[in-house]
Each structure stands twice: as structure tokens, then as C-alpha cells.
Amino acid sequence: MDAGALVFDVFGTVVDWRAGVAREAARLLGPDVDAAAFADAWRARYQPSMEEVRSGRRPFVPLDALHRESLPAALAEVGGGPVADDVAGELVLAWHRLDPWPDSVPGLARLRRRHLLAPLSNGGVRLQVDLARHGGLPWDTVLGAEVVGRYKPDPEVYDSAPRFLALPPSRVCLVAAHVDDLAAARERGLRTAYVHRPAEFGGDPVPPVTDPAADLSVGSLEELADALGC
Amino acid sequence: MDAGALVFDVFGTVVDWRAGVAREAARLLGPDVDAAAFADAWRARYQPSMEEVRSGRRPFVPLDALHRESLPAALAEVGGGPVADDVAGELVLAWHRLDPWPDSVPGLARLRRRHLLAPLSNGGVRLQVDLARHGGLPWDTVLGAEVVGRYKPDPEVYDSAPRFLALPPSRVCLVAAHVDDLAAARERGLRTAYVHRPAEFGGDPVPPVTDPAADLSVGSLEELADALGC
Image (tube, rainbow over all chains, first blue to last red; front, top):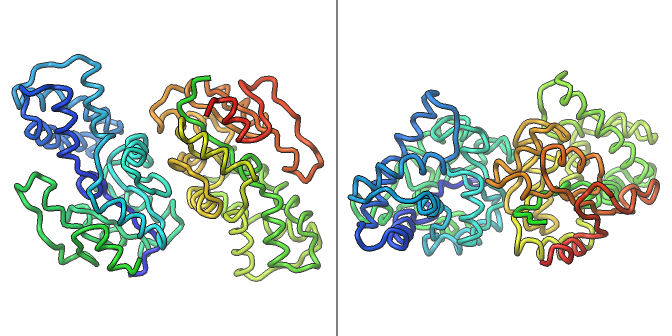
């Protein structure tokens, strides 16, 4: 695979959203809320909240705004009460402070030697900048949903990566832990690499070990660097 | 000045376009062309070429395309003949390989400790990524013309910086060596810092030493770091 650029799904693929959100929830909400269950409940509202934008029922708003809107219902689902605005704001920023998986930074450092690297996430630009500073992610620039005003799997998000990076789609590879994201990228002519992240959902469910439709399936970003000879 | 983010004009402010273009022209065109005069002639077509897009007479195209289109006339002006497509392509890429001014990288490294940093240039995303890799510019992300499909001084370019960085305009400062760029940024509520770059045009003309309308006027990015306590 002759990829000039690697673009990455981020939540689940590069960073551990579940542990990070749970850590901040435990800090901000105390022991009365099951922090991991809260993280799952909040994440469960992720796709439905974006669907309002994808369908055209509302104009694009960045993911922070969707997280803020879905917070009360997620809290209520796990028995949490309403929280003050400043606490809500801090909880939304939990998504800006997620830790990378242990292999992410060493893997990206190696991959960067021979490839352009950028997130292609539904998270916003500032969110990705904050994650990069928090975790030391060596992106060349931030691409993704907010830059084009659409959420994946809208084709425009995938199309924007080769356009901004001035490469043919066949020289851009999406790296993701989610087979539906990869399938949508292939529809637009991108290469695809699947990363198995067994702990993304806390071990239940465990995602498939490989994606037979992808160009590559690996168990970590260091394995991806091995596979690409970096 | 409480700037959370510093966004930068790049050509002339962070990198020396004239010496860089002249160096590549000398390499690619040989001694029969006055390389510095060619750089000046090409740059002179920069504003008029963007004006076609700004006026709405043509849809947005990235700066590389405008450089490619204005190349034959710039060459002819200095007595150069037509060049093969591969040479023309290499000349366009000269704008991706410009060296930073000597103070740029040490200044940015210090500024980055306390500010988000991004280019806000009329150069495209890939061009900025290439300049950053070539010169070691520590951007957090690339912003600017191509991301919004407009050329400075279109207000949308300036407005996009606080929007993508999730900051009020008053906490974003444009750093530029050109008073007109800074004036347009102030119109949109951004802070401004003027950098005096006496050699940008080869010493003739010499730009003003300060911009009295800017929040700050400095002689280098290291002086800017001093002024901001970084």
C-alpha cells in the first residue's frame, strides 16, 4: 500500500474515550454515579445526535455542542441529577482530555517519518488540537467533520482528506477501529487499515479481530508502522 | 494582551518567500534568468490572481493553481522562455520549500508554550504542511484560505480562526508583516501584532518599522515571545 497520508478516526482508534470520560466523570460527579456506565450512556447518544445534522434537520454544529445537549439525558440514565453549568462545561471538556492508547504515540511517531498524518474525526478542530497537546499526538494538521461542516459517514468528509492533502484518494489511507467508517472511506476511493481495539467498549462487546474488507488489519499503531515498513 | 491563540501570516512573516523562490528558480532555470527578479515578478501577480476569486468571477482554487497560471507571464517578464510541465510543477513547489526567517522557529517554540499556534495564510493546507515539515514550524493545526474557500482579506478567513479554535475573537491575535492584513483582522475583532521584516522585498521597499494601529510591533518572533512573556 503506497499511502502518502494516513488519516485517523480518533475516538476509540487513537484515544480511549471510555476510560477518559469515566475518569473525568468520577472526578466531577463523585462516587454516586457509575462513571463507566455514564460514559457508555453518553457515547450511546453520539450517533443519534449527529444524525440530526446528517439528515439536514439542523445545521452543522460542532461535537462539543452535541455533547452538551445530550449530557442531561445521559446523566439521568445512570441516576445522576442535573449539574451546574460549569460542571457540564468541564464534562464536555473531558472529551478534549482523553488519553491515547499506549501504542498510539510511539506508533504515530514512526508512521510520521514516511507519511503525512491527520485526524479525520467527527470531533472538532479545537477538540483535536487539545487532544494532540494532551497526549502528544504528532499531527501535521487537523482535518475532519468541522472543517467541512459534515459528519462522517458523509462522503464529503472522506473526499476532503485527499483534496486538502493534494493527493489522489488511493494514496490516502483511513485508519479506524470501526468497520462502517472504513467501508464509507472505501466508497470514496481511500485505502483502509483496521485497528482492533478490544477494550474500546470495556470488553463488551469485543469488536472483530480483523476487517477482511480492509487493506490491512492490525492490533496497534506500532503494528501498522511495522506493516508499512516505518 | 491575553491571546489564547496566535495565528500567522506566513509568506514574508514566517518564511522568506523571495530568497526561497529565487533559490529554486536558480536551480531549475539556470543562470540565464535573474532569479530574484523572477521571484518579484511572480509575487507581483499574487494579489491580482486572488482578486479573480475574491470578486466572485471564478470559484475558489488553491494558491498552487494560481501560481501555476501566473508562472508563464512571470517568466516572460524576466526574459525566460516557456518551461516543460515538470519544471513548472517544481517551480510551483518552490513555494512549499521556503526557509523560515532565522528567528521564526525559536520564536514559535517559545510562543507555543502558552498559545495555540496556526498559520492563517492564503497558501493551501498541503503547502502549509510542507512548509512546516521543511522548516520545523510547530503549528497545532493549519487554518486559512483553503479551509474556508476564501482569500484574505475576506472577513470569513479572519472569522474562521476564533470559530475553529473555540475562542472569542479578542483572544486570537494575527501576527503579520503587512499592515493591510492586520487592519482587516482588526475589523473582525482580532488582536494584531506587526512584525517588521525589512528584507521581505530584498530591501526595496523597506516596510514600516512599526504599525501604530497594532497592539504590538516587534522586530522578530523572538521579540514577540519576549513581549508576551513566553
